[in-house]
Length: 575
Image (cartoon, rainbow, N blue to C red; front, top):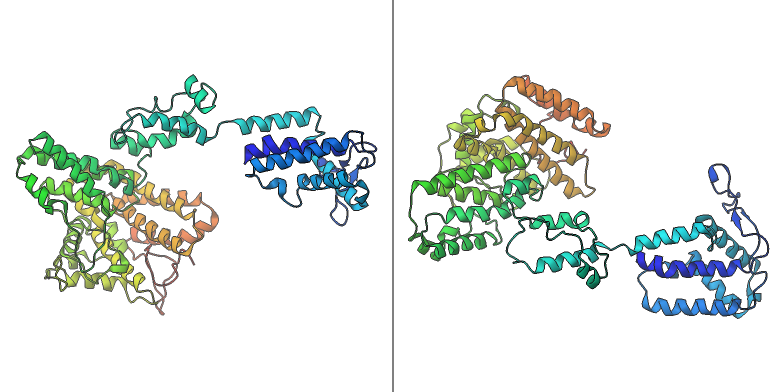
């Protein structure tokens, strides 16, 4: 459209202006301007136009040239129909073209109002670009043509696509140099481009996604931008670890390929605490396990890889809970490392069955041993001692995994008596309390892999990144109501992750963090500061050993707030 407007219609428009200028009597019409070259208008809003009047006389060959312009327009319009501006009513090009047609048939049909409109259109064109034959107009049109003739991303992409087509589709790029090298003479002739044209700038972001590099490098370069994307690439690593011990090389490659293919299947959330078929349950996978040699080296490799993946996920995306797809890989690595970890999935609120399986209870008990007496326990007012005493695991009434009714009862009581009609929101409040009690796998992984010491020097930085991410997300408040609720939920989860990292540090470090967070918040827009201040006051109260929230005699919550994501009422951050 830009090329068509610049290279096809702009020259015709200039021809139409030039033709009417030939009919002038007096100087070229100009719009009168005032201070700072601002166009002047009368009381009705019309421009003051100075200069001569068009359509006063017509050169001898004028009508023949008008006929040629109109015929050129009709012919070109059949070939170039992308740009709608030439046909748009009210635009000067359409107006001048219409009056040229009238002049061609009978100039006497023009009224004084018509001539005034033509005069105004000429004055506007001259004000913007100068006279068609002037240096100003020629320079501007040349500049526009140069812009329009520059190759588009689609033009350059064709070159890159042809280069990538010669490479195996299943492999990545060791380097981007070959794919993004400047356009060669042969490619320039074939694609009608300029030889030596640089491709790296416009297309590097796209091609970089093909880069084959260690996963840490891909995260650092933000090619892997979230836990979900990480979960899609980790099976390439996990499959190789799972195949260790199978001595036959062909069978080992088959096992790894089956593993990756199985992980690409669609994940489903089932009712009644049931789960989909697991990879190790497939009959042909069981048959291949017969050829596996079990030794400690395979377990050591699996544990080392497990720790690498978990540390990468936590340090790269500290604000995000581990997604279910990534938990599948973590669970598989833990099984290969002979570690029995009670890892819990994120439960969907719309299919929640009102029960938690045994692993949720065990995860909460592990969290209690790690976090009892810490800022985390005080902020969320958790009685971890009560959780440690639960021992009521029994078979599920649905026939799935065993459940703990007492653990569900604690989560339900902590969620409180929810008002409102949304049963999904009520389920979400209960599930959020489960995630608070279990820390959604953070405590289990920190204890099993000894991450508290390994990440000791990074905990404060991770907490700061969580807080900064929360602020950024709330400054990008979406207009859609459902998206806003999703934003509040995700930022509340990030707040919980932040508190977990702070809980593993000393009280002095947590107080220093509060001072840093307060200063960071003070640099944000005033409206957001006012909305988020209750959460900061709640955190400050928890650091002082006080409940984050206080309530009035009527049960209403005062200004200090505990930041939770789910509610059946209007969330205080959105009020």
